[in-house]
Image (cartoon, rainbow, N blue to C red; front, side):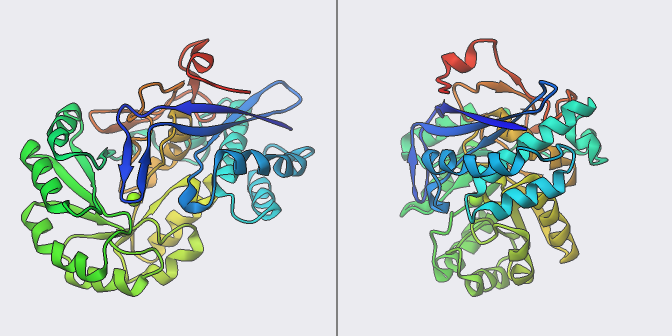
Length: 351
Ligand SMILES: [Mg+2]
């Protein structure tokens, strides 16, 4: 197999601001694997500086992966993902892009969608939430109105006006299901003080209230919370899950954290063995990245796959979210096509 890449520039409709800050533009890396038959597999890396990655670090990692895959069997997916994982440490969004491209290629060569290869039923997909990022109070209600079609909203918190933000969103969406994500910004005491308020606001999920290394803090919050507590930043790979058991009610899986579709599948099974809930999420990424993680949607309790829905210029079509319902493409592989023949160039794809 041969490996090449393109950079895609993605623009959220509104700046995507969370407790750690935000950006108006995201540079993701599309990996293209091709075999001797001319079939191409695509995957997307959504590097995140919080996890030590950037567009440049992804591109720098790719030649090592290319060498590993040069003479590899494209159907030996387990071995290929493992060898890519061992080639260099970290760089999990880069590895995830290669894993997605490998699965896309195998599915296309067999003429079946990846979720079908895994024996999963497309009609078992859960709802996806839609994220209300941190914004000035005077525009929050408008953001909620723009998300009218989504029955579940996830509110980003971790500011000095968190209660005001939740009140505004609840006021603008009195009947919607609400979740909150503090992105590791609270102390355990902050979180404990917020719980009664979140219950009063009828919030149904609390994601990553405290710092990622503070597992005792997660446990402290969970013991005081009737609202399920989920780990995101504290849970990168399957090996993180056993020590989180009992400290949280569930985990949030992302390809950019775990490094590949097979590791994501292992995370689901390890979490289930510990009787934990399982959701999956995304970074700011196009429908290519969303369609990769969405292959696992039938195994999830819930999902946060709005990365492409937040964009003004998604260069791909694949898995969709309509009124919050995730639908998988029935095309082979990841089921992804370019949005328009020329749109990727128009959207800023750079070879
Ligand atoms: Mg999160």
